Length: 253
Ligand code: G3H
Image 1 (cartoon, rainbow, N blue to C red):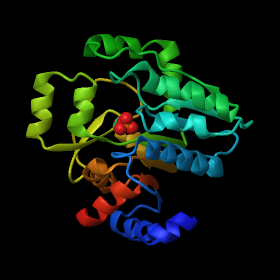
Image 2 (image 1 turned 120 degrees about the horizontal axis):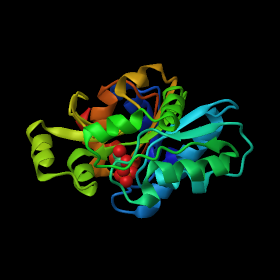
Image 3 (image 1 turned 180 degrees about the vertical axis):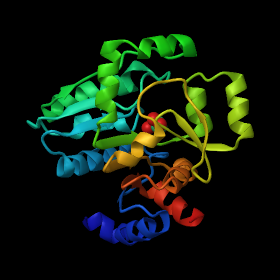
C-alpha cells in the first residue's frame, strides 16, 4: 500500500472505477509487458481478492491464460468447501495454461473439489453438439452455469487468435470486424460488442448476467484497448490490472 501511495495508484484506481464503470479496480505497480514478474503480482493480487470473497458452497468458474495461471501458486492452503470449474472448454491453448489445469491447481489450494470439461478444440459443430449431449458433460455444464464467481483473463483479439492457431480466414474476419478483445472464447470490438465466438462450450455471455461476482485480471500496456472493450460490456465487478495498462487506460478514457 505504501508503494501504491507513492505512485498515486490509489487515485488512478478511483479514476478508472468511475471512467470504466467497474465497482473495484486494483492496480499493481509495474507493467507486465516489460517485466514478467509483474504478472506474478497480478496473480498475488487476484489471490488476495479471491480469499476475501470466497465462501463455502461457492462455485468458481475460471478461464485459462498465462495471467490466471499465476493465481493458484499465490493462494495459501485453505479448507473451503467450494467447487472449481472451467469457464469454457479447450480453446487451443497449451495444457499448462488451459482452464482445466488451472481449475485443478486452484481447487487443491482452496481445499475444494473440481470438475474438468474434457472437450477437445477444433471439433466440428456436429461433433461438439453430440458431445454436449453426454450426461457427464451435461453435469459439468450445469455446474458451470451455476457458478457464482467468475475469474477470467482478457486478451488482445488478434494475439489470442494467433496464439490459439485460428485459421487465416477467421483472422481476416476478426480484422474486418475490428475485434480488439478476447475473453472466455468471445471476441469483442472496441465498444464491447461480440463480433465472433470460438467453437467451444461452457459459459455463454448471457450466463454472465446471473453471476454476482465477476473478476477480470489483465495487465500490460498492450492490453489497455482490450480491457476498455471488456469494461464496456458492463459485466465486470472487479478489475485487477497493472500500472502499465492503467496509465494507458486513463489516456483512452
Ligand atoms: O482470454 C484471455 C486470455 O486468456 C488472456 O491470456 O493471460 O495469457 O494474456 P493471457
